[in-house]
Length: 146
Image 1 (cartoon, rainbow, N blue to C red):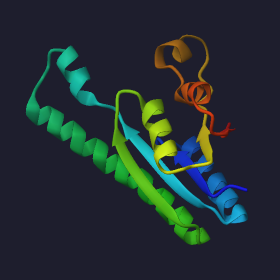
Image 2 (image 1 turned 45 degrees about the vertical axis):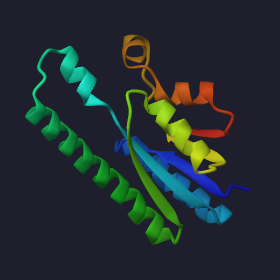
Image 3 (image 1 turned 60 degrees about the vertical axis):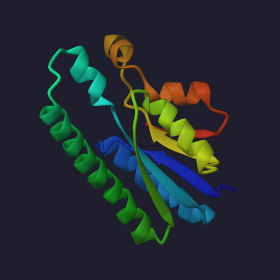
Image 4 (image 1 turned 180 degrees about the vertical axis):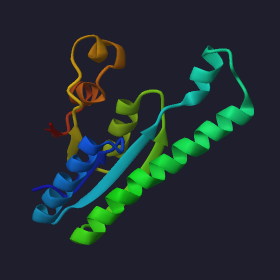
């Protein structure tokens, strides 16, 4: 049924559980997985706060890339252990949901498996929900893991 499953990951424990479930689903369907981690664009945040320092920005970007690589390495290991073909993508964007959707379309993904952190109240308003935004803006089926 599914041929290419997209898994956005933020490296959290919830996200790792979604990765494991998506890998099992891919194995069941003899599908491949594409995993994406989206790094926030810190350049605008640093400039907005008035603390623009190229050295600080470089350090923050390197730390974010190192974290991203560890998140994606986890996915590659899970997929490899299950014998599921896997491709990983790291993008930088102010709008993670947009990068997720563009990757899903560019890679011809036919399912997106992602987690919801279940934020409520003020936290949901302030932090927003990338899962909700993906659900709102895509025609690709989305499986939300709680």
